[in-house]
Image 1 (cartoon, one colour):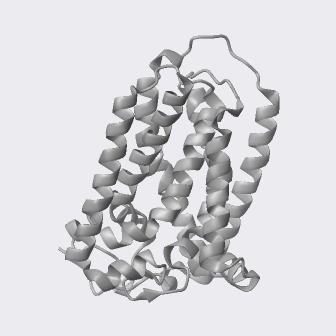
Image 2 (image 1 turned 90 degrees about the vertical axis):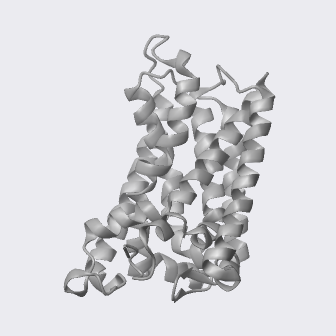
Length: 292
């Protein structure tokens, strides 16, 4: 059964869209560093670090996952498409574009830098996890931001015309809104759940603390994120989402509805979610090993 919005891939092909995943590795790597860095910066020391052997095993699992994904991509989608995604020459089947997946995800990536700490703060407060703001995760945050800048130079050379096009093109902005509806529901909860189960001693173990300075920063980040989200949503709606989306033969009336575009997006990022979770847990494990 064909379910992917390009009208070519079945459910299983969508789940194991390996060439697509390989093109997203730069974006996912940046986000894993930033996500883990913010978590550590908000919660302070790791209370129950993984044994070094477990961290080493995670590294081997991640390496094996990448090798298997590359083989899957070559076998199922061919060397041409695989190389095009990796080199940033394509954004999807039949959708070319310099900068590839990186450029397509740049608007959402920038907004997620501001959204992730707010997201983590709200969830940790809801779960009554003690907050202990510290510089413990700053090296991961700095690494993530340097990677973001370095990869942007690699793909775009900081060309202002390219960046202006990315920041104003309704198709890019519509895709950014869809990404922002995907990450908080599918990517972030998995490593966060595993980490919090490991760190369960953090739950409700001390009195409420105010953290007023932290709240000021989070408020500023929230305003920046919401402004970007509203801008992207308005641009997408005014540009006509139905006209921007692909129109496969199975689409009723020749168009895919917004709920379908959101739901199908979760499935095509299955491999991305596995990679993001493994890398986030590996970074968490490395920090715990350093803290011993």
